[in-house]
View (cartoon, helix red, strand yellow):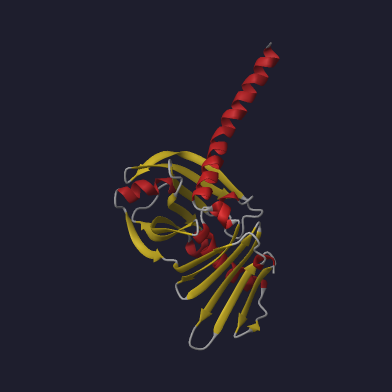
Length: 253
């Protein structure tokens, strides 16, 4: 009897510990679908970000991200794929150090990563936790924290993210993150100019920084509501074009 009771309590504790993670995963799955997840599995799309033209091709784990920058003198073409990173200038491929490959590749990956959110939250290295529920501007949200394993989490695996996902629409309307590079810091982003293109949800973001110090990342929504943040910049995806295909071979080339 004692043995059965012990194992029963152990099982109950295990199920209780797993429940928040399972719920967080379920919420993220629904959010990805709300943003066009099935279309993104086989999609090609492009947009302009600041002075660069970005092209993205996805095909069931295969990917190609390209960045083209034209100035008055040079045409710089960056390419990041499953095969690695390369850069060419005026059609000539440069020989880059591993450090430069990683640095330029991370820059391109970061632009596409944010544009695709929450699509990549199901990457194997991403760990999801449901922190709770809250309201922002009178709307109900789930609060999801995401951390990354060192293995497979990239050079910025120490970064921490919090996402606010609407409880009925499952849209990701706000996010906050902490970062370590360039002295470290935190940011809070609010989605705006939201549009659906070929079934895929795109958004621009207002980028904020807190005006106070020493606070938990998940408290950013309270600071936002209280007006204790200041706008730093606007993250705009311009001239977005989408071509979703079921026979996308570009990402494999």
